[in-house]
Image (tube, rainbow, N blue to C red):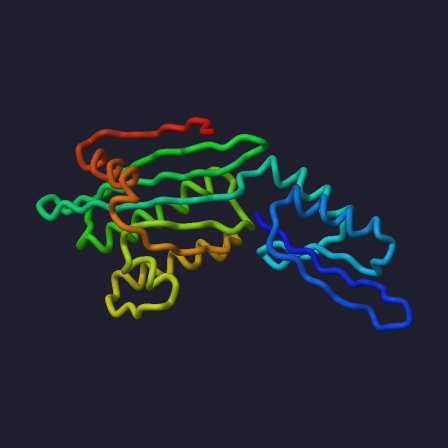
Length: 218
């Protein structure tokens, strides 16, 4: 989670001047806020996060301690593989996140049936990623979603229209779940060669290989 500082500077004989910082990591934001307050010329200082919530310095310090214990700085890679002969889909998900002072990578996959197209498999993979995030206890945070399906990501971002009724149902389910979880999604289409981990997991699911692996990463 990134934070922005807004403060007013008391200028003798003049109206207050208002400043806004760039988006900052939590530790830098707190350090900067403390340093600004030490000047003795600040009448107001507030913090805002990417979810547009507001705190003062004392509340910010308490918040950061609490947030560190919850999953945050979420980055999700997803991919859906489709078998036309069996109408099965392999779903592959890789999630990078921080909790406490540690960073983790979670790799999971799943095999599902009765799919119609590859695009539907991609939507199913995205929905599966949300279910995994929910199991992790992720809520009220920004999340980066990366995949090589421009159709899914552009339609979720509202940049491309969706005319297929079946895919619209997936769109509605996903958007409803994102809203209930309080997530702020950021969608980023990436080339297939940058999505190899999720693609491999999807392929392994179609081959009947179940993967559920969590490890700490540097």
